[in-house]
Amino acid sequence: MQLKDISAVFELGQELFTAEQLPTLYRSWDEHEIVALFDSDEETCLVAETGGQVVGFALGRVMDKPRSAWRYGWLEWLGVAARFKRSGIARRLLNQLTNLFIERDARIMLVDTDAKNHSALAFFRKNGFGQEIRHVYLSQNLEDHPRYLERKHAQKNGRGD
Image 1: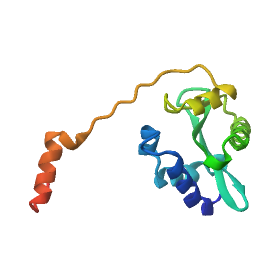
Image 2: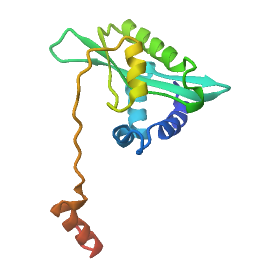
Image 3: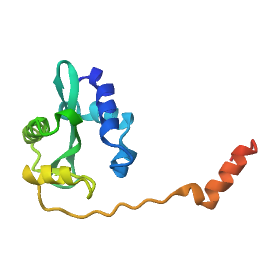
């Protein structure tokens, strides 16, 4: 991935991670996430192109845990344009990222996805991922919270907080 690819990766992610299909991923997908990953782990941010157009991406990073001999490779984002699904692009991106993690002495590779993202789960299982751990993601709509309502009322009436 190069700096010039960031906007194309962001736009492709916007198409893939929609609020209707993947609300958790949609909420955390933004351009700042991509820029931060590219800035800190450029070598593990990959794109797939055809005809000069970005059609897929894999964004990962290597993590060291304090007081641990373990180094982790974390595949944070993987996406392929709809018209290129099942063409082998995701597998090739995953394989390349796996090799980069191994070169950087990662001992374990991590990935997470929405529990309802059945195609992603099937893909990762088929490619050697296992030891699934269920994670509960909770949210709270703050628009009904008294402090939120108080703040909005003050803003509406021209008063600051």
